[in-house]
Image (tube, rainbow, N blue to C red; front, side):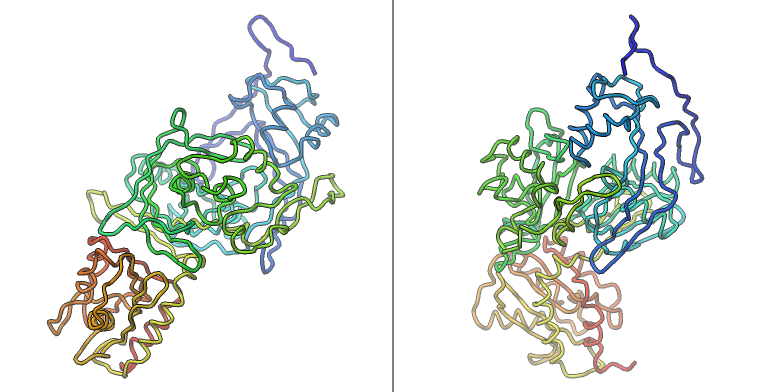
Length: 561
C-alpha cells in the first residue's frame, strides 16, 4: 500500500471521536481505536497458576509520537516482544495488519494519525494463583494487596490476567488504578471507583502528601542504619531499552530520583538483608536500580541481580563488566530460548534449565510458539509495597494509613526466632494478674539471650529478663542486634518499674529492630505508646504475621474467659 501525500503533508482519514463518560463517571471515548475483546474468557486456577485459555483479540491503537515516520515492519519487530519477528512478517504478508482499516505490507511508513489494527490468537502468560486480598473498600476507593506476577492493568502480553480485569470479572468491581506496581512487585495498590477520588489521590501522589514504604530482600550485608540514620541514593534514572524494560543510572539524561533506605535485619545463613525502602520520587524500577547502585540488588531480581549479566560487582556504582547492549542481547533471549536467572538462583542450586521459554511446539490455531510453565520463583520479586500513609492533612481526621502483612520471603527469615520466643512464653506459670510473654535477643543468627515473664525474681517482664541476663554475663550487645518478643513491649508499668520499651531504647545504638507477634491487649494498660517511642528513637518495629493467635493464647494463660 502506498502513502499518498501532498505538499501539505500526508492525507489522513479523519475519525470522529465522541467524548463521553462511562457508568462510573470516568471520561472515555467512542472511536475506532477501541480494542475488541472476546465475549467469553475462561480462567483456570490450579495449585500453582492462574491461566487464561487462549482467545482472539483485536488490538487497535493510533500512532504514538515516537512511531511517526517509522517502517511498520521495523516497529512491530522492535517495539513488541509478544511474538517473534517472523510472526509479524507473516502477519503483514497475509494482510492481517491493518492501517486505517486497510491491509498494508512491510514497506509501509507510519504517519501521524494512523490507526493500527492487528487481530491475534492470544496466549497470555500464566501468573500466580494467589488471591487478591482486599485491605479496604468503600464507595470511592479500593485498596488491595496485589500478588506478585499479576500486572496492574492490561499491558503487553497480559490482558485478563491483570488486577483490573480479575476484579471486574471475578468480584464485579470496576476500578481504575491510582498507583501502578511493577508486575513482579507485590503489595499495596490503590484503585478508584470514580474520577473525583482518582484525581484527589493523584494530586496527593504528585505533591508527595503521603509516604510509601516498601520491604526488600537484598544481596549481602546491607550497611547498618542505627539511631535514625538512613542511606539516601540520589541518582537520575533513564530508560535504556524498552523491549526488555531495562533502566539505568544516567547522570546526563536521567530523571531525578531519590530513595531512602534503612536496614531491618541481616540473615547470615542466606547472606541477605531485609531493607525498608522509601521512594521519594516515582520512577520505573527506582528502588531496584538504586539498590543495585549500592551493590545490594534485590536477591532474586531477574533484571538487576544476576552475576551472569552484570558481573561479580552486580552493577555497583553503575559500573558494568559487560556492555549494556550485550546485557540487553542476553535479556532478549529470556522467555524464548533461555529462562530467567538471578543472584539467588545462581547461589542456591536452583535448576536454571527449568522455567518459562519456548517448548519447540507451535499452537495448532495460530502457529505461535508455546511456552514452558514458569518456575514458581520466576513469578515473585522480593519487593513488597508494605505501607502507605498520609499524615499531612490539617484536619487529623482525614489522615489515613494502610499496611499489609509481610510476604513469606520476609517472614521466613525470622520465624524460627519467634517460634523460640513462643516456647519461652509457654514456660510462664498461669496467672490472671499479668500476660505471659517470651523474648529472644539475636545477632547474626546467634541467640544472645532468652527470657520469659516472671522468670527472674519479682514481677519481671520477658524483655527485662532477657536484657538482664546479658548484663549478668557481662556481655556487650553488638550493633545490629534484633529483639523478638511475642507481645508488644510495655510502655507503662503499674508497679512503677521501668517499662520494657524504655529498657530497649537504652540500647538504641545497638538494637536495630524489634519484631513482635501481637500487639498488647488493653487489659491492663490503655493505649500502649511503645511503637511511637521505638520509631522515634530510630529502632525499627515489625509485626510478624502468623503468630498473633498463638501469642495471645499463651499470653492469656490463666486468665478467666
